[in-house]
Length: 276
Image (tube, rainbow, N blue to C red):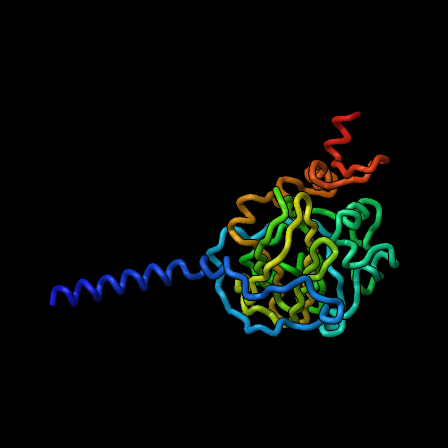
């Protein structure tokens, strides 16, 4: 009887440990691989089954972002707006969504405003803002609650070329570009502000990686959240960090954004300043 009790106790302990760490363990495992998406699949939803993982306990949720200070409004529902490049629309062709997710496109935001017409929110400056991952309406930003599109950006500074896993939560239509390539498209909401359906394996290059994350929403909850796997957050630096506006953001990333000087070699703003 004693042996049976000990065996039962051991099984119970193992089960408790397994269930207590499962959300974190699962968060590191990609269930969506093979990207980036081919152009013909840019608006195709993932074929793999979604996970419904609760990541509320994850400490890596990104809270600070760079992007237009307000949303695209009156989008006609995300089913309509999701097919339209709203960056192209707002810059009169000077920028596109894929280009904005590159270093060159990011730099252009210093001189190009997002000029949507008044019906769709009007002119938006580029700035740094914070979103609370636990709030199911964090996309609203003091504007309309429904029929909106939100764009957020961050720069991931990687120490080397590496694989990473990104975990988005969104309501509704999410699209994510990195370094000019589209890695994720999903029109289905994830169920909760910190619930993840897909852990997506991505490629990061050494140095600056520009992430552009868009979410279109029609009605009800409206959230846009993202975190990476533990190792990526441990070895990479993610910006914005301490910056609060556009000027301080570009000061923050000055040392990692590559530039093309008149010579052949690619360097960084910091390298150029040292050589002045």
